[in-house]
Length: 346
Image (cartoon, rainbow, N blue to C red; front, side, top):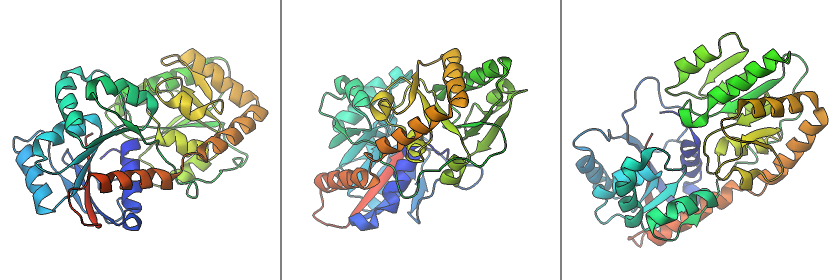
């Protein structure tokens, strides 16, 4: 299971579930292969059901009944589309995390899934606007929250070693790691040396490693201790083609890191003037922004301080409380101790 923003939100909801009077279950729509799950579920029961198997719908329906699930929380528009045929009388909440992108072949089942949900939420106003014509219903915006105690300001990195920029994102084409690597190569040609640390796993690993040959690029894989990894950075970078309210960027902002991010989706609303925004797919503009940070310590300090201040408005408690209220409003049972399924697609 590759860890991304959706998985982090699921983990945060599981960690806070008992305090909200909720008994969560987690289901993945893909078989788990390789090493153990990287996502920390805090002893939450976990089940993998292969969405590609012919018996997926009856298996999911049977699981919902066997565990007496009161509400199904589908993490993503595809997760909602896959779950709809199995729901029966179980109400569903669908949360939108990313744009439809090239998945228009899924448009009809996604529309059916969103319209069948008791409530649809989005992590940004941009996503709510994009999906409203497809959902044909109001979409509630619940911004991603961050654990401010777990991600305190990192402070200046100890002297020694090259200037280090970090990216935390699954190795997927939408995240545009190749643009960051291209920017690093442009800086190298200008005689500016820095290191790029990439946290995450995914299908692009081999291709990106080949692209980074000859550069100071570290592939850190799935990072278990994200606060410690962030504390080893001088700046943070996220240059995706699209984002909602990215958890990784919020964590970097809470850590008071100066950030560079693509001017897409919900990012401009999230960062305001507390980060350097660059166009998507623009390695030269990324290189210019990185050079500015590397050569101007005062700019780094200003952006880091402003980023932490912006992150203070994204309380993890507010996020979890908002979802808990939706669960209670959606539950067909009068029980106050809810069994909530967090389903997700990869």
